[in-house]
Image 1 (cartoon, one colour):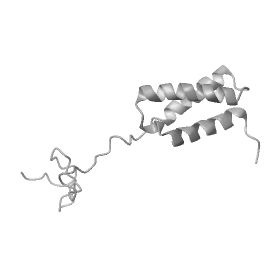
Image 2 (cartoon, one colour):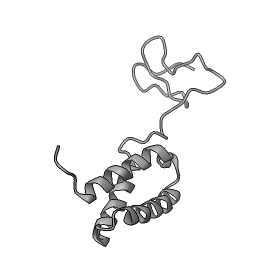
Image 3 (cartoon, helix red, strand yellow):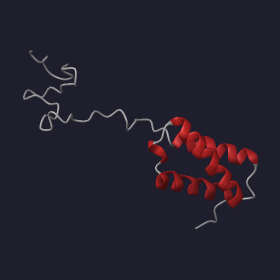
Image 4 (cartoon, one colour):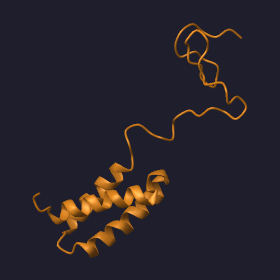
Length: 108
């Protein structure tokens, strides 16, 4: 295995910290503060990194925290109807507002 460059090791360590610290579920402002502090820590651990490398690490880290498909927008079953999974008997998927996404519209 080839020896990794300091920027690659720092990037891998940053991703590891992101996974372990739960920053993925934080608000965007909190993620920015956390990322700034973590990149400062990485600057101490990897003194060979230049300011441009640290800026790149922060940018990549913030992009990593914003997945293409948001985990927060998934619909969750309501407590009132735990057995209702949103699907009708004809295969239509019903939204919380009662609209049919697939199949025939649901009758009121």
